Image (cartoon, rainbow, N blue to C red):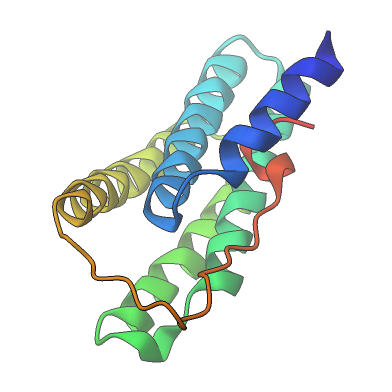
Length: 147
């Protein structure tokens, strides 16, 4: 059964657009931090570390995929990502619930902003060009917690 689920999730991720993929990553990062908080409160550092490492992997993917020069806010967003990665690492090493909650409070407004951007993009009619190359999105299904 896990192979079927993994294949289904891989197909689902491969067929979404870049905006939806980004929102999925943010949603998963929030879930990881929430699960880490629960695990820390239950004194299960091993589980918490696993969830925090997964959130770190997502932030690392966001860092490598961000083109800071593409827009004016790029450098600021990169600074936020780097800070968040550092805080997630510290959270895991210290087992600090409050720091995990602070990470969540940083992620949540970013997730909301990307969701709003994705919704507004969904309402924009983008003309297609017959000779334009297809937009390719390199993704790691493992980042979404499948596979």
